[in-house]
Length: 231
Image (tube, rainbow, N blue to C red; front, side):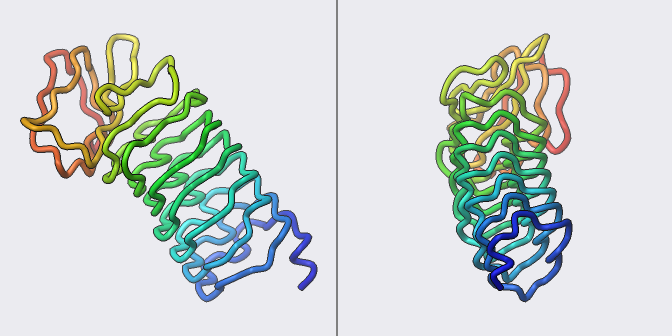
């Protein structure tokens, strides 16, 4: 109906678990609230080109969505695009904030977020990003394991300088008050003879080596004092 064309906001859980819906004719959506399309496993077509805000688990479990236009997206809350296994990429040139698990276990093979400032806990964890994962210079804050467990990534790289995070030989570290923390080892990175953790590392972060299936040996520094959950 014509009324759908001008609708700007979808309320919480409006289509939650509507597992047979394949397409909806929205043209002016600005906000998709919490759980609006949660577990809409058959949803194939959705116009998100005007969407600025994605609520918690808004599109989580939408397994058949392959492409979404996020040209205007500013923020995606917790789990907003988690478990979207068929989603090919995430391009959001204006997005500033990705909440915890925003893209957790999504199918995206590449991410383009040049203005991202905040990445929550496990924001990109267990996604399908492949090759070199370039983290934007705009990033200001990040949560635990934001970039961990990405099994197809071969290396991490920064587009610029960061006051806390840095990549060395493709491995992601952060600076702590008394030393370094290994944040994430690329899941597809293989090192002959094993990997030697950088000297001065006092902690291995949560899930830091998760899904690193090609790694055969890890050499730890004597300064190491703690190892995080599921590291």
